Structure formats: structure tokens, C-alpha cells
Length: 248
Image 1 (cartoon, rainbow, N blue to C red):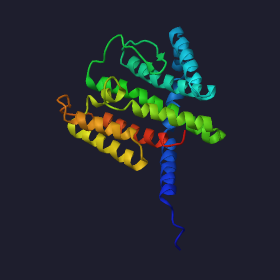
Image 2: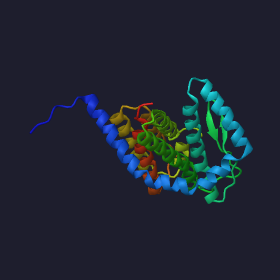
Image 3: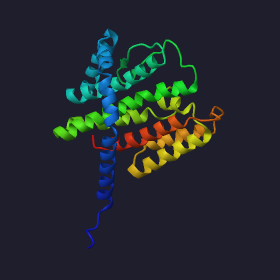
Image 4: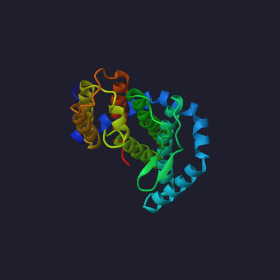
């Protein structure tokens, strides 16, 4: 028996909802890893420069039209992203400052020394979006369970912020993630970004695709590549793209 026809808009919403549901299921391991690093998150927030700059950022964000709860959630997700960098850097024995929030810009971690090679640099660079994905997924899960639209919006905007960081230009995390990838791997990444952007009608993954395609023909393309980082990068584009498709 044939069912009723589904409109294009309804089909897209169903596809986005299905993709987001799959992402939430796959994010269980990320959420558990985030919980296991709870001590690091708490201790990092007790650093006076981090706390003061976070409060200033919160005031800036809330005065810009966001509600306090929404702004607080976004600041928390950005903090988790930056602590992902800190955790990865510590794993490699690299000293770094505590996260510093810059109103109107985001946050940053200053390295006191640099990774030894491109592979190490990529792992510490993509650790931020990876932890950011767990924070975004956590906010979406909370919003879905509690029927809390603010948490859903926080998860969506957090995913967009992390997806923006995957653009392979300047000092963004995506530029570091591209370093150990070969020309073929960068083209695969570009194809992934283009497919996600077109499927979800988003421009952010398309920017990731353009940057990756441009860098594919740069002289710094690695000869051997890094399949592990390629898989992580591809997964981040798909997962963050799905979560960022949720309404704000």
C-alpha cells in the first residue's frame, strides 16, 4: 500500500532529524569521555584569568540580545572546546595556558611550546572540535529529554561554532587538522564537506570543502597522509553538520 507523498521540506526535516538522532547515539562515547575528564574541566575553570574572562564574555553575550541562560550555555560549550585542546596538549607533554575568552571573538589557548610534527599538531588541533561535539551533543540530549528549547539552541549554535573552526584557514583548528593529510585525503575531505553542505543546505560545510580543496594543491600536502585524522575530520564534519541543522 502506498503512503501519502512527502513534501521536499518535510523530507529534509525527517532526514536532518534522523541524522541528528544517529549522531546522538554515536556521541555516547564522547559524553562518557567528557565525564571522565570532569576534574580537568573543574580545575581549569578555577583559573582566575579563565574565570574572569568567561564572566566578561558572558556579560558581553547576554547584553547582545541573548538570554543569560542561552549565553551561559554557549560559554560553557566554548570552554569545553578549549579544554579539549588543553587535555590533548597535556597528553603530549606540551605546556599551554588556561583558556582565555575574548568578547566578540571566542576563546583561545596559548601554547608555551609547539607540537613536534604535523600529526601531533593535527591531534591537538582537532581535539577542540571533538570535545566541542560532545558538549553540543550533551546540550541537545538535555534539551530533548527536558523539552528545553534553550538547550537545543545552545547545542545547535555550539555545533556551528565548532564547524566553523574546521575551516582550514588561518589559525583555525581545521588548518592544523589538514597538515598531515595527503592530497588525496584533502580531496576526500573536500568531497565530504560539499556533500554535507548540499544535503543539509548549509554553507559552513561548503567553506570547509573549499578550503580543503584549495589546500589539496598546496605544496605542504603530506606524502603519506594520516588515515586516522582523515576519519576523525570526516566524522566531525558529518556530526557537527547534522547537529547544526537543528533550529536555534
